[in-house]
Image (cartoon, rainbow, N blue to C red; front, side, top):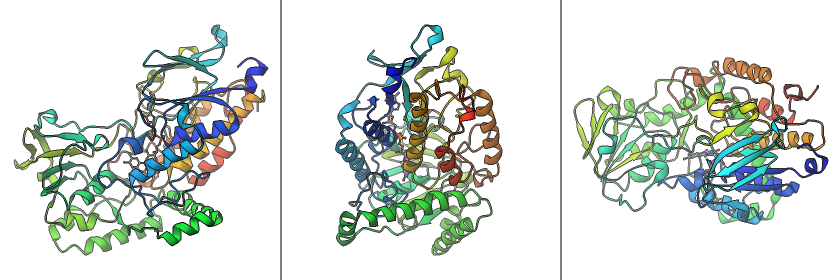
Length: 497
Ligand SMILES: Cc1cc2nc3c(=O)[nH]c(=O)nc-3n(C[C@H](O)[C@H](O)[C@H](O)COP(=O)(O)OP(=O)(O)OC[C@H]3O[C@@H](n4cnc5c(N)ncnc54)[C@H](O)[C@@H]3O)c2cc1C
């Protein structure tokens, strides 16, 4: 953006119309900036569009899984079902008038920075699968972290003769009632599916690699009276949102990082109390974890303990229960047993290191994102990248993750991005590009801190990168809030401070 007129009217390409992309669109619209939202699917909603499995629900309080500017008095439950969350995002996008500014069913396949020193205009050229090309001053990648389904590498996976699908690609044409169902995986998704299918299946075999700390919660439904209070008293709704945010993101989100925290002791004690109510000793042993709570993402459930005790449910685990291969009629475990099924469901998570890939992204001086991220993804302050000017990620690599609302993370990141953009608009910065040294310093500090978190206490989880180092934001949430509110300008090229 070399010229003053352009500086006053920057344009944005937003990639992805999930929670983060919709947020960016609404905020940019309010600020009066031009933008295009690119969405590869035919509907907005990201996670909440792709995941429709039985039992899907928020696992943080709904009143904090809401945009701070669009609180929702209508949430039916403390942790509302997935379909309600999708409706919420669709409604908010419509109310704020951004739903018809989304280019659906056309993935972005290429982003190329055209630098003025190479005869370009310091803008991003964005190309979609259909060959449509647009240029923008800034790009916001809101492409999601839990987006690309991951299937396990199990021998014979494709040989199963019946219906088999990933939890994020649920086939609703497949009958489940009275069927023999195999379910691989006991993360948050596997646990939610178990609760929903236990009463419906003739037999539900749940293949568990590692026992989970499952925190029991009540499924609280809001009464009409409570909803009416939220509808008519916006202060009460704001207060509830702020209190829950402090409790979950700042309080819980921070304490859980501390290996010796009292909060983790309390969580373990609560889970053990619930485990103690299980009479079947063998079952109790199977589902009792042997690592520190919080090392893997805590699973929250209102019906896991009841579901696993149902006659229809078998937990298959341990050395004997390890999956050896998949055969046309079912799953063969290490003890030689063949578990026969009508339907096989893979609740085996996502490729968390994909982020915006497989897009081709080329920054300044020909920097190629695939090369920069050849070992693993990283980002300065979880949001910008050296070598890729005027490019932001929402919920990108090293962002805070945990048992709290990612909406707040995206909101804080967006505010940071806007703060930086304003500095370009006002001429204080020529472009937004963190320098290599600052990015490396941040990464070194992050890696060191990450090794002292509860995530690194010896369990296998999706928080760990290929070296076994937690890839998430390892500092207190309060620090994230501060870093987002006060950008370290000296870490950016050309800032001169
Ligand atoms: C089952 C499940 C339950 C969850 N529960 C919670 C919870 O309770 N609380 C919580 O805080 N978080 C939860 N999460 C995390 C959840 O992913 C985030 O809260 C949030 O929905 C992420 O929004 P996003 O917009 O960043 O990414 P996504 O929702 O993944 O959206 C990304 C969008 O980008 C699009 N896209 C990707 N690549 C391209 C491309 N090249 N071109 C065009 N479009 C593209 C995708 O199609 C998608 O629509 C859950 C995740 C899962 C999978």
